[in-house]
Length: 269
Image (cartoon, rainbow, N blue to C red; front, side, top):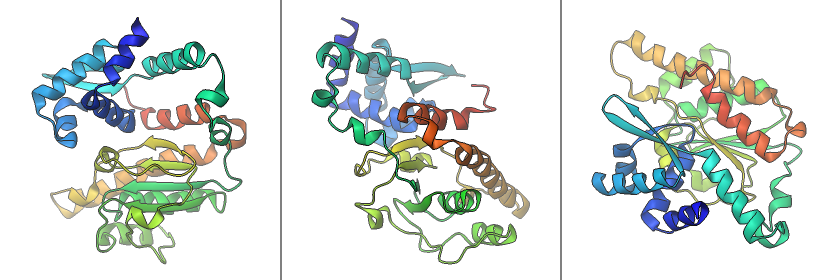
C-alpha cells in the first residue's frame, strides 16, 4: 500500500509539480514560500501539497527557526522506482525502460552544459574553470534562460586577472543549444533550476550546484569583489573534484551520486 499511496500522491498535477521542482533543486532544502513563488501557487495550497508528499515518504522536511524546509527524498524515490521495475515490469528493462542502454554510455569526449539565468558570471566561471582544469577531455558550454546583454565586467576582469583565456565568451540563450546532446547539465543558480527547460536529447546526468549571484551583491567594492572570489573559489573546488572523477569506472547511478555529494562536502547539513 505504501507504493500505491506514493503513486496516488504523485497523480495530482500540483503535487507532481512541487515534487519535480524539489528533484531539480536537490540537494538543496527549499522553503515552502520559495516553492510557491516559483510555481505560482498560493502558500497554503503549497503547504497542503508538501504535507501530502512528506506523509507519502517522497520528500524530507526539516525546521529552520520558524520555517519548514523541504528536500527530495532519494530513498523514497528509489523505493518507488524499485517497486515499478520489479513488481510492475517484472524485471523487463526493454519493456519499462527502453532507453536504459543509451543512458549508461557517455561520449568519448563528454559534453557539459552550465546553466544559469543571466549567463554573465557563475556559469561563465564554470565554463572557463572546467576548460582549464580538464583541457580537451570535455566539450564545455554555458547558457542562460534570460541571458544578459554582455558579460558582467567585474567577472570578466577577475577571469583576466587570474590568467584565464576569455576570448569569444559571451552570454547566450539556452535555445541556441536546442538539439545538442549533453552528457552533463549543471544548474548553478536557483532561478534556472526553478524553470522548466526542454528535455535534452540523450537524458543527460544533471546536478544542481546553486550558488549566490555575485552580480546582486551590494556594499563596498571590497565586499562585492569578495562575493565574486567566493563564487569562483567554490566552483573551482567543485569542478576540481568533478574533473578528477574516473568516468570510465563509474556507472550512471554512481556518477549521479558523486555529483549530488560534491556541493555537500563541508556542509554540516
